[in-house]
Image (cartoon, rainbow, N blue to C red; front, side, top):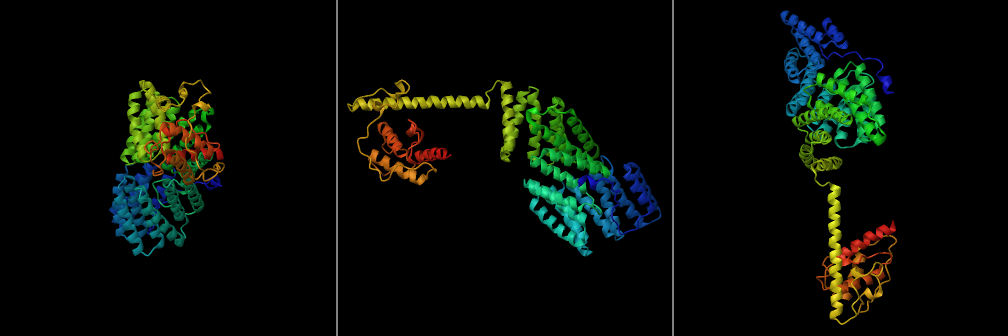
Amino acid sequence: MALELVKEARPVQLPPSSLSSPEWCESIRELLQNDQAPRALKAADRALRDSVKRKDKAGEARARQMQVRVLFDLPGEDPDDIAEVAKVAAKSLKGVEDIKGELWTLRVLALLDAEALRVDDAIDVGNRMLAKSREADDVGLEGLAELTLAEVTLAGLRVEKSKDHAEMALQLFLRAGDRCGQGACHQVLSDLARQDSDADKALEAACKAQKYFVSGDLHVSREISGVAGALYRQALAQLDLAEEIEALRTAEKAVDACFQMSARDWEAQGLVLVAQAKLAVFDAKGEEGNINHSILKVAQIGADRVARHRPKHRTLMAQALVTLSDALIRTGGLHSAMSAAKDAKLFYQKAGLELLAAKAQLKLAEAEVGLGRGEQAKEDLTEVFKVFEAHKYFDGQDRALDLLDGAHKQLGLPTRAELAKEEQKKRQEELQRQQQLWAQQYYSQQQQQGLPAPTPQWMLPQGEGDSEIAKPKVTKEITRESSPLDLKAGMDVAVLKTKVSQIAAVIIGDDEFEADTPLMEAGLTSNAAVALRDELSKDLPGIKLPHTLIFDYPSVAGIADFVVDQSHMIAG
């Protein structure tokens, strides 16, 4: 269905106006349609000079508005320069009472301010639009103002306000019968859902947007919009849902839609997404996947196009460069990958996007590890891990630690696996030491009491440790208040604590101790500890209690938790 929607190229739209459109407006439109923005700008400048010379205020206002429209399509134009032209145009349009033209121009100004991260200024312009639209009592224009506020507040990550404005705009556009306006609102809602990490909701909203964009005039937008924008957002959501093949197909449709609409800047944005989807497909194949150099080619074209059309757009430039860096790493271009990742990090930092800057720095570190620059990689990865930890980005933390192991190997430092192995060895040695100490104490107590002294368990040949002679005898009979516990369906901790406390109290001869009090402090000797283990084994059929039970789980609560865990394993 999506391909059918974009087979016919849409004509370039002229900005809305209450004024009549002279013939030169159509000439400018045709030049834009044929991708000749520089010539179109000259035509708009000429029309402005002629109107000023004739003292034609309406013609002057319309010419200034057309200048803004052409500058929007002019590759590499500085947003601040366009904003200055837009301010003059808005003032001129206000002078001739062209409310439609004025609000269109104010929307452009707000979007440019948001792109330059002057979000508060953008919100002020949006509020001016809202006030003017209400004065004019025009539902459609009020919807446009609310849509603008939704987009600029989203650019400033003011999610709740953006959602409120988007929902209000949706209602107003519905009343006005503006389907493209409704589609634009669903695009914002899709972006908001992705901010909340709700990929399913984002995909649903993007699919709704596509249906509304079948016909009608699009509202001016700096970000990819219309059918292309809806497909673009569907592909983003599909990537989040790990539907890599579907995302690639959808992203390619989005690029095709941009081409048919003669939207070269949007096409650049779409190409970057195609490269991201191709990389995701490669990753999904795992070791069986063979990197195709066409992926690198697409990433390079996307980055070049973004640099040509939107060099001042920090986030778009950063996205393109991170994608290019990723593709370069896969194809062995590590030096170029480092350069691209470093630039991407700077763009994200200037945009105030700390987490994304850290992700770019992660690519930088990956290239550094590949080049054997362990020391620099270690520094970068340490910084990256702190940011990921602060943002609770667990996948990123795992990747950073994996790369850090690689850097440590290069520097001759132990890896995580080696450190864990060493720690496990130390624990085993400590456990063995405790077992020997316990056996020695028991052996000594038996001698002092004039009882037969068996050989300590750690000195016996394997298999003799559980012989009758090694087991201490309980001198006091244990009176049980219940039968052995059923372990088939797991255990209740409270029941377990009662059972352990009951037996421990009889052996110690004192029942005044808390569940979390170490039993050794409550009077349990090493001899009695063995007796406690033996008595518990009788009431806990199926549970294998370790010889070091009291050392590993020193309290009633600790023993109870251990038995509960074991019972869960038995229950399966």
